[in-house]
Every structure is written in structure tokens, then in C-alpha cells.
Length: 356
Length: 124
Image (tube, rainbow over all chains, first blue to last red; front, side, top):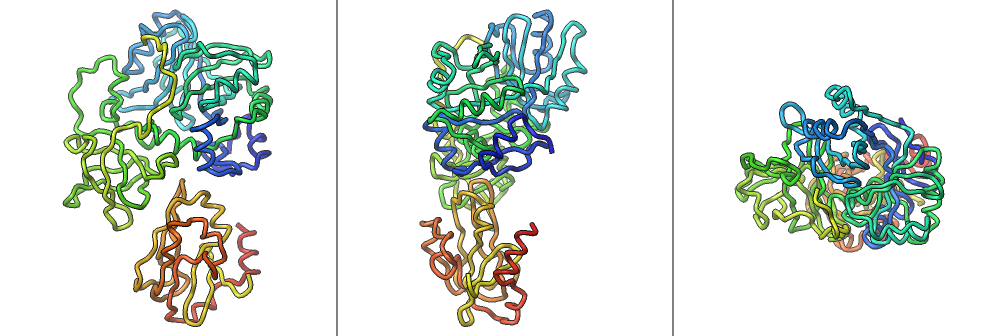
């Protein structure tokens, strides 16, 4: 199994490790998933996401913009320097090869973060379509840390003397952390304010330890990362979106530069159980006469709401929030309803957001 | 704990007369992590050895709890869903999930004692 540059930091903290996308990753630490989840919602949590793929594209800017517009359904022409954008790679049949965040660091230099389990496929696909004038640099010598929570800005200031108060949400820029250059992006996968820090693998264990010394910081494993993103309704590739789903079906029409397509026959929606129980990925969604109308692609217990939530694809006529449905779990049809996502409001700092 | 029996699937069992009190071991609790729900069986439910009669849900996963013997559920721990921490108590106190009336006492001979179970989890 592969290891990230921070593997020893996790084992030193007593993390419960487990396999994810071929990597031996921390699932949770000593406090457990619920405490970790709640800590991110109230303070600041530190995640190792170095298993994700980090690529840099350089070349003539019009060529890179044209390339991204060919590889994704999103518009890139208006993406300003330092601005980041969530999008997907679409395959020949319109399904999604991966979802990713692309940052235009400056005019002719773009940064993209890919899912760990898809990075090899993505890079092969991107290279196959890459114009000769554009260089794609995939480096495995960079680590990626995420610091997420309302205290993240304060932690960055008190730990590195870095005032990020003016930084926009969905933007990225190079800074020095302890005199070490790092690409710091204000974004994340938790719905909280926070940062992702791309930094050389050699110094990453040191940066991790320095951040861990701050009293507001707790290490957070992949289990809480999953419950945090589920509460935000963020899709997880390979579960909620894949090559058989289109962006419109996945309720990601907002990323499309051309939004004129037909209304899809099914939609990804949020589901909340109205009775006790936990519904997980694969559970059938049924109507009041017991017919299957969809299935859950993610599901679990929400530590913030203390309720069971999930998401899944459902026939479009049944997809309006408030629609009463049932989720089938072990021989029982549990009453549920379609709800709007996110399940609780995101607290990311959207102020001063640039047009993108 | 003295007198307790254990299964390969990490149930722990206290036998009192012809009734088995069934809970899950510390090893199972630690593997599951934070619990969020326990689905209890109906009283009178007939169970076969190795069939599940209850489900313990943690944040990340659902674990079925298997019956150590053939029998019939005579009591379910109604307090447990409201006090999930109680699953960590000894099975003979608050830690039992259900009590199962044993129909074939000979099946108890297949269960491990504490020393054997300890060896078993070390081998995992």
C-alpha cells in the first residue's frame, strides 16, 4: 500500500489507519469520528489529503483555457489570476471522469487537484488531449494539507504570522510558511472556511507538527471528512458521480457554461430519514406503493443534525424538496423526505467573491 | 470476564439457565468506532445460530450481530438505543443487546472461552 509523506505523523498520533484509493490513510484518530466532525464545525481540523493528485499546467494562456474548456463543461475565459473553480472532466459520452478544482495561479500557470482514485486515469486522459504547447507537470513530491474550520484563518495567523483576512474564498496564491514556499488555497471539502496547503513532501511533516501545536487544531481522519462533505451535499466521485452520470443529473448544472440542455430524467437529491435507522449507499428509494424510484449513492449519520441523511438519484417528478419517500433498509421501508442540499448552511467566506 | 463465551464474529455471551445474554466484545466496539444506532430484534423472533438478530450502526458502517445459538428472542434491551454507551458495559449488566432462549444447549460447546478468544483476536 502507498503511503503519504505524513504517514509517520498519523501513526505517532495513534490513528486508526485504513486503505483508501491504494493509500494507507488515517480513518480517525483517538477522539473518534463524531468529536473530530464537531471540532471541524467549531474550531479547526487538520487533514492529510496528500493522496490526491496535484498537477500544474503551463503554456500559452489561450491554449490552456481552450484545453480546459474542451476537457470540462465549464467556462474558463473569465477566470482571474488566483481564482479557483470546481468542475468535472467529461468523457466522450458526457459522463464524468472525475471532479476537480482548477486554480489559475497566474496568467499562464494553472493548478488542478484530482481525486486519488482517479488521478492515473485523469492524467492519461489529459495528456492524450494536451496541445503540444502546453506542459502538464504531475509531481508526487508535493504533499497536500487541509486546515478546515472557523478558526483556520486565526491558526494561520498565529502559527505562521500570515494574515489571510483579505483572501477570497475559492482562490489560491503562493506564500511562505516558515520560510518555505507553499501554494495556499482558500477552499475545502467541509463547508467551513479553511485552506488547502500544497507544500513539498520533505517539509510537510514539519508543517503538520507546527500546525498541530496550535491549541485550536485537531487531526481529522477520512471518516469525518466523509460525514462533513455529506452534510454539505458535496458529491464523492465513484459513489455519487461517475462515468454513468451527467453533470445535469448530478445537480451540478451550475458548473456548465451552456445551461440550455434538456431537463434530466433523474436528479441527485438530498434525503433525510424521518424515523430511526441509518440508510447507506445502495439502499433503494421507494414511493408510497413500494416501487423503486431511485437509490442512495451515499448515506450515513449526520453528527451535526443527529439524523440520518443521504443523497441519491431519484426520478425527476419525485425530486422536489418535501416529497415524501421511503428508504428500504433490511426489509423495512423507513419514511423519509427529499430535502434541499446542503443539509446545513455552508459557512465558507463567499464575500468579495470575484466573477468567475 | 469469568464464565463468558465468545464467537468468531465478536459476540460475547453470558449464559444464565437456558437463556443467552448477547452483546459485542470490546474488540468489536473499537473496530466500529462511534455508535449512532442499535436496531433491536422483536420479542419472539426465532433465530438460528449464525443468523443476525440485531444491527449496530456506527458513523461509518453497519454491523450485524449474530446469534450464538438457535433460539428465540425473549427480551431486547430497550434502554440501549437511548444510551449507546451502555454497549460498553459488561454483557451481564447493561451491555446485553438481547436475551435469547437457547433451544439446543449443545451448541454452547462450540463457543470460545475468554482465553481462546484472546488468542483468536491476537491472530487477526
